Image (cartoon, rainbow, N blue to C red; front, side, top):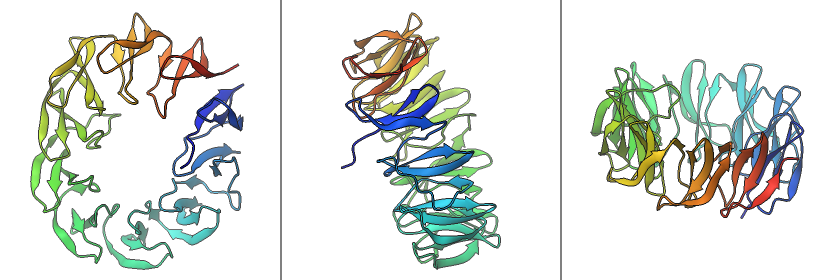
Length: 339
């Protein structure tokens, strides 16, 4: 089990601490991403390099772009072409593809000579480049385009769900997002439109991404939610809404923020100036211009004292006070503070 690491800032440089507040990787990078599957990306001389949890850099070759490690491989870009490296930094699949996706269920979608096919981790085409487009396999099905439309193929490359949409996204459990005429809805694994395309896209928002089994849906200027079971769980009726976390989602009613449960009923009355997502049993909210944290009953667990606050993760939350970064625990105790 990997210990969680948390990004810190000191004198304009970034490093990482552990959950006890001990510096594990000294702040020395101008930019750094978060850790994912054992690696974080850090910037060296305008190039991104993967770094492991001990602070070791995979420096065998410098790449323009490095994707996340999935199933032990990360996509990388050399000039215009894409290939894959392993967790030792070895280029195990040479960069010769126009586009490349992350590995999922042992396969990755890549574009070669304008067509999309699927590679195995050895770099061999399991499904020859024959599709207009392609996405990740989830539960044995992947989005793929043919004849100007998109459907879903199985691992043998046959269409299990015939192309019927303008665009389709990878499955998330029992359902997948499909697009028609600029609107999105949901299909099930049999190809039934359980929620016909009807929701609009909102700039800067995730669309059809499920959090806690629910996805934000926007229609006619109002926000609601669809469930991973393929139903409109909460009809669009709110001025603004945020993602579900631990059974609750923030909503805005008449300029104030509160929280609803998964049935759409108010669980915490709208009384906050701004609010965030529940995680680790707490959510960040703003009152009188300051941020604090409430519990699922709506009571303050950490009084509002911060200029900014982020969701809890693995027992810690990043807050900002007087321009300085600091991590606090669930009781508001300072675990680490920027000097």
